[in-house]
Image (cartoon, rainbow, N blue to C red):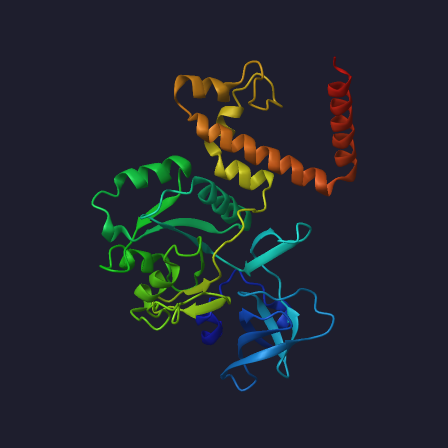
Length: 338
């Protein structure tokens, strides 16, 4: 395995068979019609330059992609082993945020009220990508007791590791570095202002990525491009913009992974197609009554389930037509009532 590509995060899971005998590199930043790429030239040396996109590319490259470079042009995007994606802001397409990711750091600041909805949706995004999630709580130096916050997160994301950190006093930074060892490509996800850049600075022991904000606003740091950092711990970290939209892709597998407790209870329901919403013999609703499952968690599952059904109807014209027919009938019935 080429040592330069290995330091860029290449693993045995990455398939470079289609690039035999060609120059291979990794996309650092995507600019739309071009991309910054680090690759190994024919002389075996590292090259770092902006490349134009070749014509008839099989995919539009994103940060984290392995690509074939020829004469400073990206001529092929190699097979992806994972995609971090969400619905495109245009409401029609899918937006790929990053490719070939192993670990997703869900960054949550402790000095703000826990945004449960964002936490749930980012978790769904991670499960959908096939990567491993890790919740990283930032700014814990300003709180005397972190346990209530940790308990709340654990209740929402059972089975997901939670790490308490502070870029100020270094709490948890060494532990975080152990997650980011050689061959690991990680991504930080979280709302703007969650402390992602400060966390990266603490990991690398530098302050070059942030500047003090003056009263006029000058010096403000804003992460507006996707960047790939080679960390001293051996891994690479992809820093992408704060998530402005809460929409994420939802599918059956990611929903089941996110709600393993509800999925397990479902096997005990009387009917195989139980919707857990007033159905007779529902083991899930019984667990809420007995206190073994929180009502809020079930409500979240119902909301996600409705969204999944909606996405499936969008992909299935016949199902969407049937749904519109039901809506039309329900609307007519309401109008006909005295």
